[in-house]
Image 1: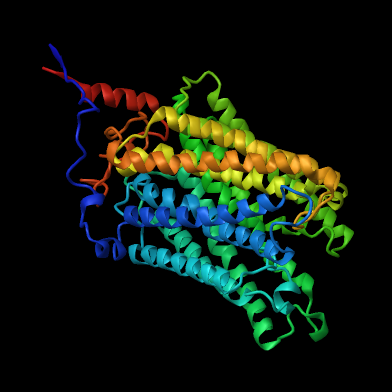
Image 2: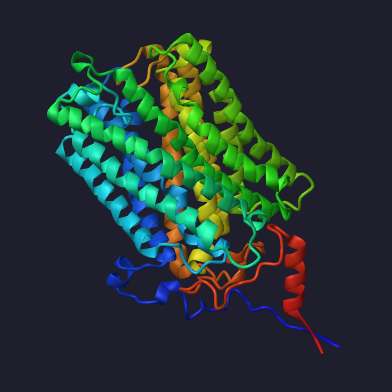
Length: 553
């Protein structure tokens, strides 16, 4: 005889009484916490704050470009707007967005650990991030920076009407936050995996974060040293980049892009890990070619350090060097393409459902593919010479970083929100937000490909009248995009109190994080888990669920 045990009604269930959320309610308990989940929430709040500051600067840029003359603000003010937009968005949002929030929250649980390897260093990394953000705001209040987010010399070393020192030191401090986070992830993955959690049972999310962490630890110090040299040259006049003092401005480009192109993959690799989890869950299949996808993350991390000079085809490097870097740029597209094709094969004949995280994942695949394909044009010297410093570059970068990374970030936030908070969000409104974001993004940035091809230069407040229609389209799209970004903040906040109880595994996913209560215990697990199944093994999950629901007597 068998007895079927009814699962709890999710609409009337209550949140678990014990969780990381109620382990000490005071502000002090949060500001001094060593719990990776609380630190992830602190990061999420901070990063969201800086995202909307960066978005404000972007909105001012688009308002200026509604009309051909610079009639909204002076050219110098416009320079400061797009510079501060870039600095805030790249260093305070895109680089830490997925690793510091979602990665911090779920990576230890995914490997079966009770916390990250170094909890105090994890908390220190958040304080360093906040310090870097405050210093960036100080640079803005003092008068802003107008060198571009790349701190290009000689503008950053000689021009007086800019607060490069404050902004440079802000990025320097925030960079150590990334280094500490990457170090923590690497040690945790190596030393704190649960029994049975072999390398090839790790979720692909962990593989992506591991590869990105290697890039953080090896690449970020190069940027830090470069910015320190800029500050020293500005303060005491050492001749590192100044030709009049025996320096070389091209050296700055080599040093800056040696970090900043790998930084693209620091931003995008964690997002790719999110997409692997979401696509597998909502197609109910193991990721096609798991091993190939895992090693493609490692390959991206390796190739990332050998393509920096494709940013420098018009800056005086030799034709032979340009040819070599052009070839390497084409090769780095291969491991990225492996991920796209394998995700597509995962979807093939899958039991696909279209929950909100999946919609954002589809948006990521489409926008990142367009961004990657247009990168082939920029990796080719002939096309790059024509397109460099035009709006084609702006569109390409935003399709990869904003269209790709931000879509992945929103996909991950919606996917793990029930685990973080124990509550669901309104599904209809969240699907609408995903659709509005996708439409608004394409309306904003696709016209910029055309503008760039026609020759409109970036970083100018004024432009010829024949470009106005496309600029109006782009600004209108930015308005729609802003609505798409504002909606999740509103309904996710609403869900904290009014969302229905999620339960431990609302998506019926296979990862360890879905086998524990929502929100999790402070120590994640009652007992150390024993992993005896492969990643994304939905047959194992079906048998486990059947065993839990049906008791035989």
